[in-house]
View (tube, rainbow, N blue to C red):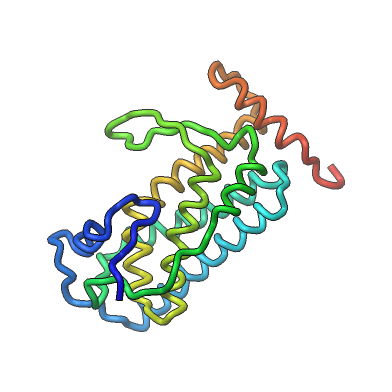
Length: 223
């Protein structure tokens, strides 16, 4: 058994352990009903679909084809996150996260996504709408960070520790990847928006032009 190691959330092992419940106590483990088993299976399917799709986009390395499937997949994983957020808090049976081995090395995924997205990789967003401060980020970094969090829970699920998987997916959604996915889907939507509507836009002209050029570089057969 090992303590939780921080992923994209940047939390220490102790902070993660204390935040299993609001009062810092692990509490009674969540009862695993048939309905909860089915729910966990649905979330696992969505997580796996996201991971496979993002890896496929990175492997194809076609910027013109990348935006639409990424927009679809991030939107769908946000639905999974919303379903997790709407659930009561999950409580694993142990204070420590079971050892599932080293985290997957997703650095190649990040590099391939950065190359694929090129000039639209860097974007700006408000991290907290109630404490508005615009920050710059990279879609490649954020998508890889989301994938890391999701893959961690999926490994627990495949090892048969369903409640631990649900707890991790729920906790990391609230603390980390939910915010990143929301920002990423808005950035991807913005690329489609400027390409489809050709509206007047007074700021970030170089990024808008790059987005339009990327999408226009791929013309579907028969168009």
